[in-house]
Image 1 (cartoon, rainbow, N blue to C red):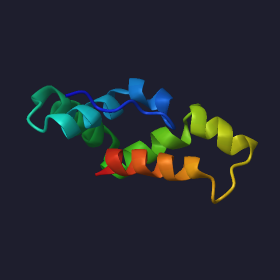
Image 2 (cartoon, rainbow, N blue to C red):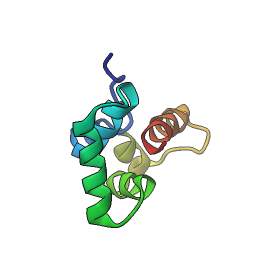
Image 3 (cartoon, rainbow, N blue to C red):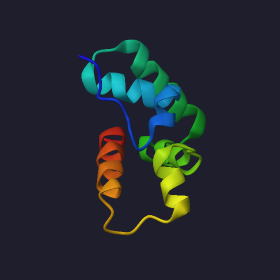
Image 4 (cartoon, helix red, strand yellow):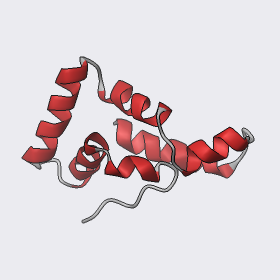
Length: 90
């Protein structure tokens, strides 16, 4: 099974940490993906949430572009982005 494509954070799909987290969501026994996550967290000294947050802050993807143009608090794209982040951060 393949993870659903990221939309709001499409640019993050190429990031090794994000790719590994998405792989583990589909196959928790994937040793290679677990090693990428462990190595990233060891190097940063942080948590999954902090590492993903750093990537989100540096994002140039669709949500980042929309937010820079002004995104209303009730815009449904925010809910979609929140769902993508929730899946990455667990």
